[in-house]
Each structure stands twice: as structure tokens, then as C-alpha cells.
Image (tube, rainbow over all chains, first blue to last red; front, side, top):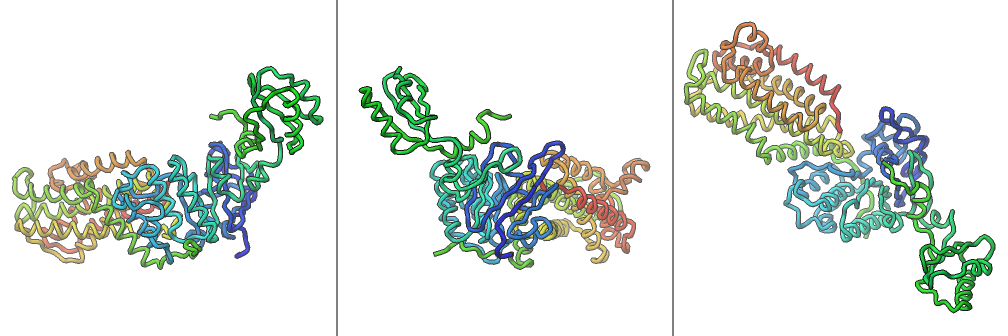
Length: 308
Length: 254
């Protein structure tokens, strides 16, 4: 069991009445990694995470967390995981520090509470009741409650939603430290930069299934080509440019004076384009070679249309 | 330095129970609305109606000898039913119960802690009301066993009903309904108005309410010094079984 993956899900199905929230989802998360679960709203992220936490009973499929069944072996599993819900979870009248101290008391070997309070910048609101904390302070308290019991595996459901940049960075730093010390972290997020910054592995969920997975690098490398952009005078003769480019490459004028060259990118291609520009007496301004970002990959996979 | 190196484990269950009971009690005693309901209202009613001849009381002794048992019953209802229903309803609404569900604290321990919190609060209420009643000239009779049996079965009956409400209705609906029930049962449950004032057809129904059984039972013992009030204990036991079973069956944690 010590060698079992942190999370192993096979063929998970979960329905709410008529609606199928999770539809045959497979997922494997290795120990000691940070995994980002990405997906549009309603993709099934939270349902999947909450099944791992033991809140939801699968309609089909198997879920194992640290080798345990989250429902039948809940009593054994619960002390070993840390949970941060999307919102709430704290008595409205409780003060931040006393709530954290209380959570610590439910565990055998909790972290040092004052150090954690200091670390997450909760010291100034120690005597403020939960309902009077700012959204960011509430988020940080929930994060602290998730880690105070020194769990092996932490589930963070949108931990930085609505945080200011400083608080986001503080959260990221903590996630990195957890990983450094051997804690497995599973985080759902809408922020692509968060996934790129933090995650060893990214799992993209849509329509109740994992539709792509891998390291951020792997995801960005595959699929569509990268591209070269430059600005110049409007109305350049792109037909002439295309002639000197390799087969299958294309050059388009996206907006007057704004050009994009799509081709398998290598140093020679950049030289070819700049040599052509030199021949034509054009100074290519703001010349950039762009790799696909995780956001591009995500939008390609899940579509660009807004969903209801 | 590896500050966060995993070292998971639940605290020993007795420590979790103690911590949770203490925490819930602290939350309750800090809540102004709860204190109004559990402390201020019973105290004011006891002092007011003992001093002023607004309601005509029945049975032997002074006015306070009729009123004190009724207000002890009200104290139990205010804490075990009204207060617990409202607090638990909002804990459910704010995800507190859900979050605790993922902590090492087992559900039975959470419910035990809630019961412990109710009992601690009731002990404080009973002590306060007794001191005030004694100062007003109360002379209680009867045996301690019957009184404790009534208080405990009453607590079980009201807890079951309070948790049933908290675990099935929305928090706002629980807030409204629990307060409404509190007022209605205060007036029609033999707390300060003797049930003999009601028409006999209505009365035979009111007699079956848990608050009537509790106030009548406490009055039977404390005011008249009679023996064990079996029929009142029986009514409370039935409510306790029905309420707790329904709560166990229908309670939703989220």
C-alpha cells in the first residue's frame, strides 16, 4: 500500500439526478507531486475531488486514495489527507487562530500553529471572527486548516480564487514547500499561470472526463505548431515571403501591419524570415517566437465558446 | 528543514471529544442571540411572572413553585431544541459540518460533542434558574432521580427534533421555524400558562407535546413531591426515539 499511487481513479461515474457530472473518468496521481486539475466550470473537477475526499459515493468505477477506499475506509483515510473546500468550513463566530488551534487538536502531530499563522500572514486577524475576515484571509485560513494536521496528501479546491497577487504568491510558496517536504498536492484551478508555475502534472478535465494529461511542457509541445510574430508596414507581399518558406508554412497579416508566420519553428526559419525582411527593406519590429501556452492548449481542447 | 514532512494521525478520541465539546460550548456562549434565548428569556420570565400576578397559577405553594419547573423545562427546550437547531442549521449551511466530515473527528463524536455542549449549557441554566428561584422563595420537593430522568429524556427528545430540523431545512427556514415553535410551545406547553386553562379537547392533544410532558413531569415532582411521573417519562421517551431515529435517517450533512 505504501507504493500505491496517491490517487487512482478508474471509470468513475457520478450522476446527480438526470445530470452526469463525471462520465468515466480515469486519473492517476503519483506521490510527491503537485497535480493541477484544470477544466471549465461544470467539467466535473469538484465532484471528482469530493469523491476522493469521501463526500460522494461513485455510481460506477473505483476510487483509491493512498490505496484506500474513501468511503469504506474513511476513518483510516481522513487523518492522512488535508482538505480545503471551495468555500466555508469555519464556524461563523470563530476567530481565525482559535479555529486553527482547534483543528490542530484533532490531529496527533500537528504543525506549530503560531509558525503557520505567521507564515500565512494571519497574525493580524487572529482575534477577528471568521465572518469579518476578508475573502483572502478566509482562503488562507482554510489553507492553513488543510495542512495543519501534517497530511500526506492535500486537496485544494481553487485555493487562490479571488486572492490578490501577494496572497497568491504566498499560497504558491506554501505549495512548493509542501512538495519539497514530500507532501502530495492536488489543486483545482482556473488559472493557467498557476498550473504552469506549480504543477508537475496537469490534468485537463472536460465533460466529466480527463481529455489530456502530462507535464505542462509535454502538453505545450504537442499538437499545433508554434508561431513567429512581427510588426511592419501594412500590405507586405506575403506571397513572396511564402515562396522562401518551407513547404506547408503560412504567413498571414492578422491586422494591418501585424504578421504571423506559422511553421515548424527552428532557428533557420527565423533567419529565413529576417533575411527576407532585409531584402525587402523592412525592419521587423517586436519580433517574437511564441510557443503555445497552457492557455492555448486548454482553449484548443475545451473550445473557445463561453458555456452556460 | 522539512517543516511540512507528513506525520499524519488522529488525536486520541477522548481528546478530540473534549476539544470539540469545549469548542462548541465556547461558540455557543459567545453568541449573543443564543444567550438571549437560553439565559435571558427564561430568567426574565421567571422573575417577571413570579412577581406580577399576570397568569393565574395552579397547584400548591407560591407562584414560583409553579413557575420554576416550567422555566426549567423551557431552558431545556431553548438549548436542546431551538439553540441547537439554529446553530447546527447554520453550521451545515456554512460547510462546517462538511469540513469536519473530512477531519479525523468521527461523526458520532461530533454528535456526542454537541450533546455534551447542550448538557453543559443546561447545567449552567439549571444552576442559574435554581438560584434565582430559591431567592424568590422556591421550595422544591421530590427526588433528584426523577428530575434528572426528566431532564435527560427531555434533552434527548428536543435534540432529536432540533437536529431533524437543522439537517433537513434551509438554515433560514430553521431559524424561523425554531423560533416560532419556541414561542408556540412557550405559550401552549404548560410552561407559564397552566394547561387546565385550555379546553379539554385541545388539552388532551397539548398534553402529548414534549414540552408539556417535561413541564408537567417536573411540576409533578418538584411542586407536589409526587413519585416518578411515568406517563410523562413515557411521552418523552417516545418523542426521543422518534426524533432521533428520524434525524439519523433524514439528516443531510451538506
